[in-house]
Length: 116
Length: 111
Image (cartoon, rainbow over all chains, first blue to last red; front, side, top):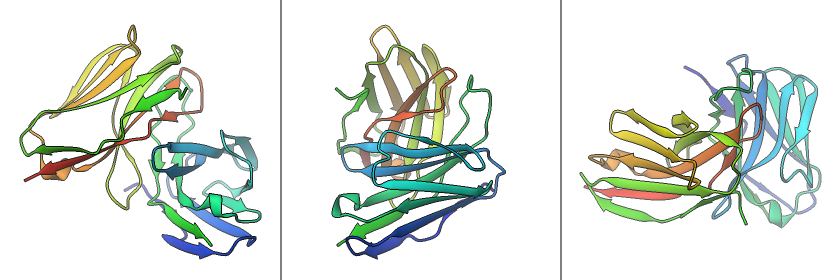
């Protein structure tokens, strides 16, 4: 059974704190993604990685950074948490494919982050 | 204007009803069209996808794509309480990495 796990289901942090969200996949997937999900806005891509140490900005990278030192692990870092970063954060992974087919994205259960 | 528009609902139907969920989009380059289902407190999971125009059926679910109108639909026949979830449409270009998601429609099927 495919598995994407996220380090925390719920997190409460203070404004200005540095926050680390961890994601691990056990499917040997090349691609990994970080999204945030907000009511009425759907899933918005923050960053994705197509290989170890490789990353690309998504639609809303400001205030975030990522790290991928190992193939199975993709970390999202909030450098200085702000209240507008309160959200549900979802990690996903997919195989590389050819870009000419739908490579299913497998999602983790999400981390609900509250920044006070 | 958002690239993908989806009515957030909620949509409430009685058990056994036919459900129609829809999305419109603006980017004519989209070729892959997907529907994800997300249960409460879970991540989304791929339900089905189609390539370009046409229909695809999988059990009680039918996905339709009308590229001329930039309109996609998901039909659920004989809806069940277990179908209660948020349904997100998603789409992408050929050769691209980025998938664009709709906001999701929350569906309640009442027993």
